[in-house]
Length: 335
Ligand code: NDP
Image (cartoon, rainbow, N blue to C red; front, side):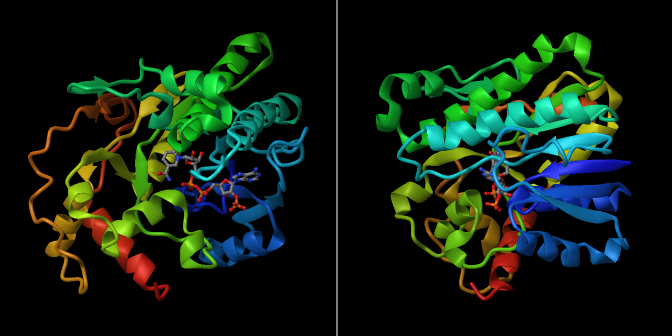
């Protein structure tokens, strides 16, 4: 079958495309320019002539943006959405996130008559709320804090909450769309909620500064740009990009996944854990930080990914593997 991947030029989208190709699917990736499309065509040339094609979607927010792209595909992976912390106006994130998601679903209803399954890349951003004691979040939880803060404070909301609101509102819009269009649609929806995603990069990145947000965050640590006290604070949770990409493929190939939301979180971490994981990697020039200093700090924000393990059969890389492969892939580019 053929699968449409929106945002194929992104960190995750490129891996979702590659993993689909490895499993024998044909892929149509949406990108914003011919240059990005041609880069991917070359990257995926070894899978065979015509296995990867691209469609230009300049702005996911525009009315009917995906009308052409959805024609003739059997499934859709919607990964495209802005992820950064430098939008003064929250609408710069919420607009493309929500309208991009609703827009692609509308295009599928109109022109995607062969589509059986739609996967929307959500995030733990749509699940978490601040906590002060040990908490295990599951798929039943929703972020009620960020959308409210953005509604009340607008531009004054925190950068993190602006992004979280965009992901929460987009995922909620997707479920609402399915509910309201029950009679009209021949596909079902799966949403995936990964935590921070790290791992090797295969997409086109013109400069170090234009690396995607999560890779840049990890790399600040590896370049020794974090104070010791920040290295040992509990941060959040991560999953390897290859595992999150596998989850996207399994979300299509697993019939029982339909109609479900999945957390895909591997480990909680402190930044120090990454330095510790790299200490034994044999890679040169890794800062030491405070060896072992992150181990026993209480980690209040935890996630239960047992549903994804049971239903999708999802497995995770270790932090040591993710850490080493990330650093190797960045250094290969001379950074
Ligand atoms: P990237 O920034 O690397 O990729 C985002 C993709 O979306 C790119 O292909 C980008 O195109 C495209 N895109 C963004 N805005 C628009 C727009 N307005 N019009 C057209 N295309 C657009 O980010 P990631 O790969 O990290 O993120 C992919 C998905 O995963 C997102 O939905 C994100 O929210 C989610 N996610 C990411 C996590 C992470 O830690 N990385 C964690 C949890 C969820 P272009 O390349 O042209 O900019």
